[in-house]
Image (tube, one colour):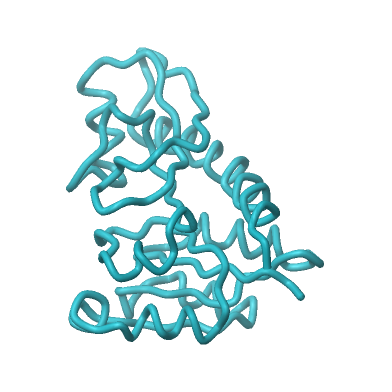
Length: 192
């Protein structure tokens, strides 16, 4: 029986797409569900193109009920992958999936992490600090933004004349290369 992955995303969903592509022909695991808090999110169209079901939820359902947790349990989800998901994960979800929720952050944590540090804000902070390198961090999720145990980090060089778009591109290349691979490594360790 295949292991099942649920992906949470709030925006475009390019990392979600890379993961869906990676597992499309896998005999070990599958993306069982895409979840979003944004009904306008492009990730919903990406899910449709892969014929993967999706679920849109609001703040009340996510934080005040067990609706999302029950949905994941009913689908027998083994691993939760956050891919550009901007809300803090509630305690009921962390409790139900201990050590089985992961996130990707577009910086080398612990630098440039925490509430409000996402997307272009992270890259702008890296540029403002005159960093010579940027990168990505894949980490476990706990009850605080970007504070879970690190799983994997990858770096890229920041050149003096790099623009915001160039830095963003370098980071996204690393995300798309490494996130699906790390998800596969972790899903293999989960016992069904």
